[in-house]
Image 1 (cartoon, rainbow, N blue to C red):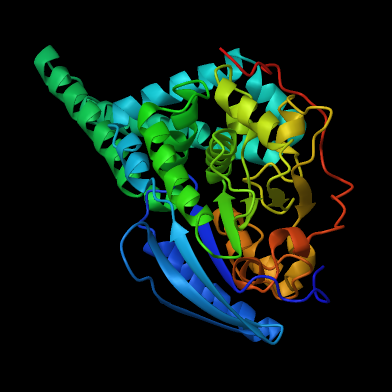
Image 2 (cartoon, helix red, strand yellow):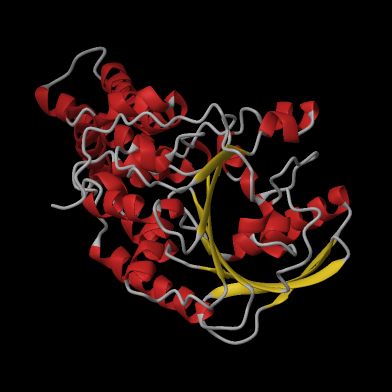
Length: 408
């Protein structure tokens, strides 16, 4: 979109907000290094990483040579993985308690059925841990029952049957422990904790997260007072709705200088409706409404129907039922996985749902107008890159949310 525009960005600050992820942020550095190198080979440009100097947030520096010009960027990861890990520290029994509570919050409020009107993929992803955990419980119960039946097949005194019953319960418990130990492949506990995180407060932010978001806002505000050409905030998955509230707070507080760097916001693979459709998500809905009217930033929302974990092409403001008449943002379009990846690559990734949810941060075989590395390290601002770019015609803007209040 911006090939014929002269270079306007020579230096950039990028703030990446991860989703609900307990992993150390070095994972994102290695992903950027590996995939950026691959995209550079495909698209014929140069990109290199070096260690970030100084303290502060975890990050790295990027030196790129794109479209014949040099660009420098500093990428900071706004880490909240420690909060995620604490929320995932529940016992097996507590996790099953979360299952009941989370299912009740989404089903009793009607949010689950309204979310299905948007995209079935992320709703199925939300139901997966429920089904998998119940299947694990059933398997454990059957294992214990079979042990009890086998031991008592020939009868015996009551005390013997009592011992057999205890052994059956013990075996069932060990089966549940085995499943939890191997959740790195099944993701049932991980996803259950993810959806329970928002459901526990019915869409409100926990105090620890609010405190961390304030710290994130301070870091972004400091960058906005520097002499870089663009400050780009990237929110991936659950990080998208954190970014909405952080930037809304900054703009409301007058912490975005009119003569400062260009402010850009890009949401990738967003799951905003999973939170904004809950009863007490007043803050998020108010922030969505406010940010959608702001002239002081550019907001681009990129998803793809091939990503079954995201609300693809769902305008997060509109579907949440809070779109004002003078709505400006976000610009919603697709990363078009099926067109930007070769048939062989798409076949390889099609059923790897979690990997596809991170494809926005990876290399494409034949990128169209979305290239994560040109956006974060290229010579054009987000506003210039997508100036005049129409929204996807297949985007969903119908408001289906029952809860549209923006104040308690």
